[in-house]
Length: 267
Image (cartoon, rainbow, N blue to C red; front, side, top):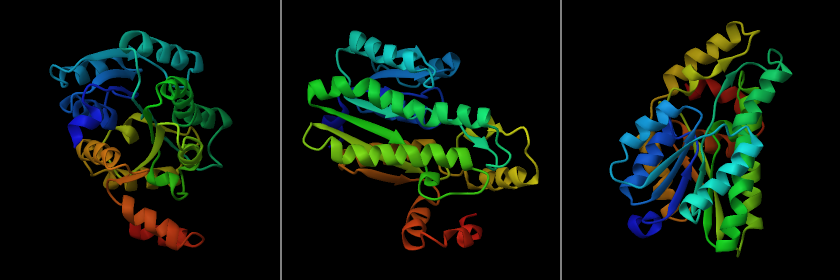
């Protein structure tokens, strides 16, 4: 089933220089996809391509927070590949900080990558997919797009926004040949926490969250990537993957008003 889904198709992956993005690229390569891989880190991109074997892969240095750059990237991909079948809006970062401690500039930085990056990627590639009457927009949200968590205010805003956009597209794209998928990774063992930022006014609250996060990042990104691709192949609209993802999903549904009291069980 996997070969017809991705074989020969053009897959765009942002944030492909490490973590989930790299794992997606490698897994897509194994399925015969043609790869347009982007990241702000060119060294990381080169390392990803080295793991993709003989697959057709082109790399692009890209800051997803830059609207003009993402629009230009879509034009480059169409020029280089002639099509866009899957776009994985994966690039992301984290800002550890309570809302009180977070400056507006720090929140802007977080939303620029995690939310506007997804908006830019979705908006840039959707017209081509609609012309093709074929395509799949895969937006990476988070378990923190299912419930709010302390010291993750800006991150919550970004990931809830990604979820809201994607769920809106479920209805808007019906019958167009294009579909949208929302992914909620749990604790994936990437460098997102170490490579992320802590607000300048951080105190013990942020330190406590960072210590908990380190213990929760346990699922290998390769397992996450396989879950995502299998979910797409199965026609899922929402994909849960990684440590505690299903627990958080059901807690948010069953206890929408009282889940904060259950946080101690999520460690």
